[in-house]
Structures are given as C-alpha cells and as structure tokens.
Length: 453
Image (cartoon, one colour):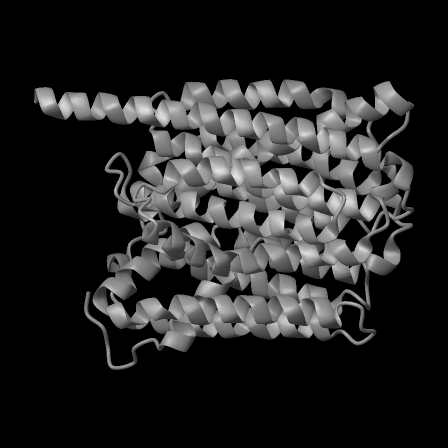
C-alpha cells in the first residue's frame, strides 16, 4: 500500500473511529429525543422502530450481495445514504413523514459502517502504527457527541439534527482522503459471483422479528408476541444449518450480543416504566463510559496475573448483571458499566480471533463477527420480551410494557419487571458457564491434536 503526501491525521482517523463506536446508539438517542413530544401519536415509535430494525437486518443481509471485496466503497456509499437521511431529518419539521424516511436511510447507511471500517483501520494503522492512538480521540469524540445529544435533545431549536448532519458530513469528507491510500486495489464492493441468497432470507427473518419486538416495546400492542418463540426457533435452526463448524469465540460473540442488548433494553424499559426517566437517560452515558473502563479493567486483570481474560470476563459480565435488578440507581449504573466493560473485553478477544480466521477473506471477517453478535442480540430480545409478555398475562392480566410505551409510570409493576430481568440474567449466567465449559473442552481437544501431530 502506497500512501500519498496527504496522509490522514490522528484526529481525522479518531473521528472515523468515533462513528464505529456510536453508529448504533447515537441515532437511536437522536430519534428518541426528537420524538419525545409525540408520545401520543404513531410518529413516536415508527421512526425508531424502522431505524433499529433496518440497521440490524442490513448487517445480516449484506453478505447476500456477494463476498466483500472493497469495504471502502461500501462505507462511502453508506455515508452518502446517511447524509441524505440527515438532510431529511433537518427538513422533517416542515413535513413530519420525512422523519420516517430519514430513519430508513440512516439505518441502511450506517448498518455496515463498523464491520467495514475495521479492515480499513487495520490497513492504515499497520502502515502507520502511530495512528493507533487515534482510538483515544475516537472515544472522546463519541462521548462528546453523546453528551451534546443529551444536553440539546429537548431544545426547541433543531440543534441535534444540525450537529448530526455536520458530524456525518465531516466523516464523509475525511473518508474521501482515504483514496490517498491504495485500499483494496480499487475492487468492486462485492464479488457478485459468490452471492449467498440465504443471507437475504436470514435478514428478512431478522427484520420481521425486530419489527414485532419494536412494535411491542414502543407501542405496547402485544397481538404478535405469540410469534416470538417461533421466530426464536427458526433463528436457531437456520443458524445451526448455515454454520456447521463453530469456534469457541463464535459462542462468545453470540453471548456478547445478548448481554449488550439486555443491558440497554432492560434498563430503559424498567426505569422508564417505574418513572425514573432521568436514570433512563443516564443508561446511555453508562454504556458509553464502559468503553473507557474496559481498558482499565483489562490492565488490572493482567497485573494480578490473569493472562487468559476471555473466559473469566465472560462469567463476570453475566454476574455483574445482578446489579441491574437491585432497586438502587447507583448500583444499576455500576452494573451497566461493569457488565458492558467485561463484555467489551470478551468482544475484543473474539474480534482478534475472527480477524485471523482463515475460513473467511480478510475484508469480511469483521462482518462475520458483527453478524453473529447481532444474531445473539436478536435472540435475547425475543426471549426478554416474551418473558415480560407472559408474566403480564399470567400474573396481572395486563401488558407490562404499556407504562413504558405510553410514558405513564406505574411503580406497581416494578417487582414483575425485576423478576423478568432475573429470569433473563439466570439464563445468561447459565449460558456463560456452558460457553466456558465448551471453550475449555475445545481448547483441550486442540492441544491434544497438536501434541499428537
């Protein structure tokens, strides 16, 4: 790879890195803040529903177009789509339905960003190792944008859409500088001769499942919730059929997706339902801050002599979730930070192994990990919301998510929501123990194989 004189700076690469950290949570926060005044109308939940569902379905379905051969072109095209979506967001006060189109475009545009940015980041930092420090700038940018969204989210002026538009525009302009690096030999975005239509089917299944779940979460209408066990079983069967050869880090990636999804969704649903709305907003900050704490915790664990961090961090991530069901806001925040931080360490280790996995071409290894993590997230949501739905039907004969959806707090359902959380946490703790046992067994088998060889 030959770099021209116009090399990218640490700050510029840091800005690109910041979007790889915030591409999921930031748009969700922005749309939620823009729609907070329309809680009595369908406009409140439809854009958020579209954004969340489309983004995850696109991650899963992307591989259906063919084997990834040029992540740079995919990122550039995605950012252009996102920029158009940001413009629609700016114009939405003039014509409200534009907000739904904006959510659709932003969801499609940002879906592949993180998975496609990873191979680009690796190529650039291998050529210029000093740029690895840009990750620190990226985290600072990420936290700054999150804080600005929280501070100005309730402002009458369209400050948040303007900030988001400038943010995406700057990233797009910086991305054009990457042409100065000879990335991927100017290949086409996809190798269309290696299409895999099964990913389209899986993406459609993900979209349908998430639409049902988001519709239930954001509107309180539960008529389709009986379909969720069927969706979960189809997910598991299709995934088992499609992927016959698992690695231990594949199971860990499923787990990380499930934990991260549970932390955010359960925290938001519980605190909003019982009237603790200020805490609900702090959940976003706690999740963002956990990225900083993960590196601190990793250094501490290494200093005390724990070399193989993945397995103990997997269990610690699940155990830390117990703090989320203790009725104390401070302990809840600590639980969020710890669980996310330990999960980030597991995710980082799994990502490193995926990037060395020779079963896939280099350009799509990060996409494989993101796709599996997304699948784990969807499965967790199916289980969480079905448990909440069933507890409401059996115990009080009412929809437990109605207070969350209508923003009319009801402290009387606190115990039932905490019980639903406890069931999910128990399943996640059990899952973490099983995965660690499987991982140890696989590693012993691998060691035995090399000894014989």
